[in-house]
Image (cartoon, rainbow, N blue to C red; front, side, top):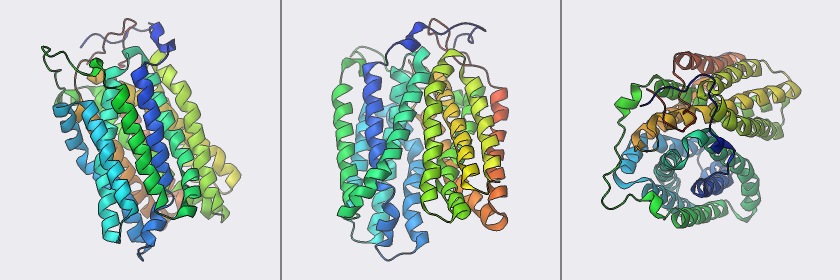
Amino acid sequence: MVSLTKRGSRPARSQREPLPGEIRVLVASAFVIALGYGIVAPVLPAYARSFDVGVAAASLVVSAFAFFRLVFAPGGGALIARLGERPVYLTGLGIVAASSLATAFAQSYTQLLVLRGLGGLGSTMFTVSAMALLVRLAPPTMRGRVTSAWASTFLIGGMLGPVLGGSLAQFGLRAPFVVYAGALVLAALAVGFRLSGARLRPAPDAPPRPVMPVREALSHRTYRAALVSAFANGWCNFGVRVAVLPQLAVAITGATWAAGVSLAVAAAATAVALQAAGRLTDRIGRRPLVLAGLGVTAVGLVALGTSTTLWVLLPLAAVSGLGAGLVNPGQQAAVADVVGNERTGGTVLSTFQMCQDAGAILGPVLTGVVADHAGFGPAYALTALVSALAIGPWLRAPETRPLVDGSEPAG
């Protein structure tokens, strides 16, 4: 590890250069994957209900995917360390594609639950391996931009997918799953072809890249801070936003269309913030963006819980969305800084992903319990507190932005 970024130093000009071709194909594949995921999202609960089960059982099918992602995350990191990023990425896409195609032909609720859960295993494989590829291939001074581009395309694909999925549903509830499987096959072919070059394979006589163990990463205060903010980000933005914000919008307006509008406004604000945050995190550092994002998220959420009209809720949803867009590039770039380009960090990255998934699973459940017993105001105050508490570790974390020559950060 080398010294920390010098105060006042400027990043290299590479942040204004085009993204490398390998990064662009990963970003394009992320869009296709997110689009496909969004296609099945609006029809999955209805598909589950078609097997004559209740709301709780239908919700369990949705949660099974996230649960299996969380459980298999350590295994995904170990596979990357053993087999490499590209094989694990392609295998993960193949598993989700096969799972989705099989889901389209499920004959019972039990089959649907099992097949959807198996898709979560594959999802962990390609998510963690994609993060590992981005860490390995992104120039150190472009990590913020790379993370921003990756997150933005995932977000946009996730926004467009439900619209397409609703249109496909007119051909039957099984049709979106077939289309999703096809989209994953296309993404796998693109990545398999474009990332087959020698750059991803060490020379035959080259020693294997050293593996960074989790215990070493945990000795770095910035990595520990990133785990905390990942949990908070998962809780606030991947969990409560998706599960609770639509219910708040409907409770205020009595109109189901308000749920989709509120989600779209928050997502659009996140997409806008990601574009600026990606460049700023490479220019001024990881910590300022993460700290600002956590603070903005906390303020936006605590105010959101006091909304009484849609015209108050929508701007506050946008504020919380801006906070999410500021947090993500900085924390992921910081994790990439800790791992570096010359080491394998599959388990380090999967642990980061596990924290985010854990927040996304626990957040809606605990926030929902509070909302049922005390109302949306206290529920959103709890969520804002989670984001605010994540600020503390980042105040004590060292900055990891590389020096102007691209050299790696300090521990």
